[in-house]
Length: 392
Image (cartoon, rainbow, N blue to C red):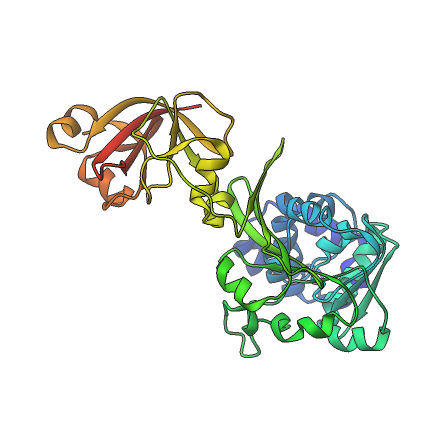
């Protein structure tokens, strides 16, 4: 990629002036700059638009060059990168799968020096330029295969970071860690030649149990959600660790972050109750942990049913998830439904219930929205019921 062409003042002005343009219409217009590939120019606009909320530091900085839009889509957000960087620190670290470099920018605030490895030559060139713009002077960019770079450098690092590609050589989407690139499962002992600490990022779809079967010496699993949507799993690996890992469920919001720690090997015990005054729905990272008994024990609240994953109490608690006051308990019976549910406006959710929300809304002519939250669920007596609630 010719960075000089993209960085020309008139090109940068054109990009910034068209951030709110209809891209499909813009792409059909005549290229006002024949000396530059119009597809590349359009891609800069698309990628910068995608960066606005996800990468505000990059978006607000002048003369940033953007890669293909897939690199923007796959990169960490600044929100998750800041959290990730808080987990490790030291003198030297190396990122084996550098990508657009968002994580490394924040790692560079925790380490004296950072090495960014990237197979794609164009992307490596772009990232090097952007680090110069952002004055991240303690990051070095190496283009090539990170395993070969590690061999050539032949030095110890305080941490090796890897975000394996979820696509194999055939560009097919894969889900097991051993099928990703690089294959961290096979390379784990190789990495131990150069570090005692490895941090691996995986997609949220990866099953925790499956990951633990593939990886050795996992000391911590961080389930990272942003605004109640799980974005990534972080696996902290320590060479000499031989116990069960701690599971850390994290929800990052603009004003605060909520962290709940659960011991993966401890036997937790849930208590059960019929609905009381308050209802709690765990946030997405806690749900991903699968430790539903632990939630009951840690927060001293009671489950409605083994499989309902809703909790209740008489005393209000500050819970990591959605909190409600139960106003009405409606048995799932025709007469009661007709009186309390039929044709009403409410927000419908289901937990351990045989009918899906869309079917419920259609069947009972429910309009979406309003201030009433209706949970269709099952209680500890295996009775179907509806909890009409006010969100707190």
